[in-house]
Amino acid sequence: MELRHFRYLIAVAEELSFARAAERLNISQPPLSQQIRAIEEELGVQLFERTTRQVRLTEAGIRLVEGARKVLAEVEKAARAASDPVNSEDRLSIGMVFENTILVESLRLFGKQYPNIHIELDRLTPPEQMELLRQGRLQLGLTFVGGAKDPTLAYETLDWEHWVVGVTLEHHFTNLRTVPLRALASEPLIMFSGAKSELVPAFRKAGLSPHVVHEVNSVYSALALVMAGLGIGLFSNSTGDIERKGIVFREIAGNLPKLEYGAAYRREAQTYPLRVFLDIVRQIAKKKRPSTR
Image 1 (spheres, helix red, strand yellow):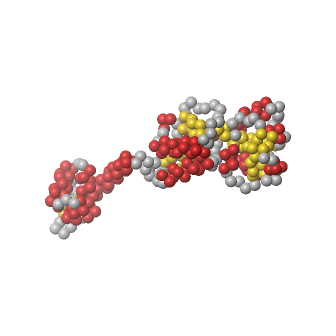
Image 2: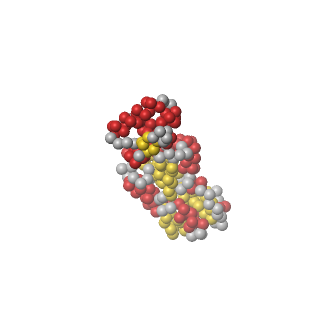
Image 3: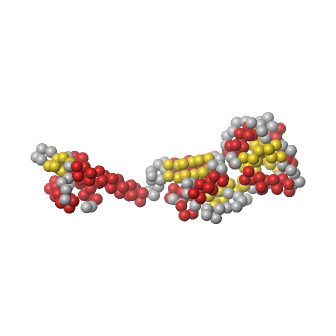
């Protein structure tokens, strides 16, 4: 049988009239009747009961028409995918450390171009993202990718960020435009566990001993601790994109290592939606940070 035979069967089954089905298919009635009889002979079953007054599906006909509908639906789905590789069946799973401008603008443009794509967006720490990427449960990680890198993953640098200090409105640092590194050393610090191995040596190189009171893995954990007055936090400069009432950020005057913000993904698992989104992310990152660092 050919696909057109499935369409003939479905038309007759829905119209329950060879005349109306032939009109719907834009063919004459005799050839349609002949095609249906040929299908019945090929399968060795009767698909329709015919009388002078009505046409009715047999049990075999009901089962075949149901299968025909499924086959045509799959064919139409494949045709749509061929004409537009990104279709409503596609999904894109993204892990983020926080909502910065690069992420938000990329999502906005991607959603505008491909509104039928289902985006799964999760707030995850860098270690969580790496683990889910390795497991194939995450397609893209937008995170800080400094330090040792997993050889099974591909990495792209999107930006180099610097450290800023986040404090409450009542803190005396709000009166300063920039905060000296020496002033930070005398304050209770909230620091990211993954960055401590780089930040503490930077303080010591300047002859300072930082007083770290809390170590966190999440930006939002650090923000909550700062808001609670349990210390001042060291954040990447793009954390300022997050609106948090009661917290202000100040630049730091001193030599602290920069942070490599980028994209991580599995090379062999690049879907079309992922490639499209990565292209958008690269464009936004280039536009946002055009200068060479």
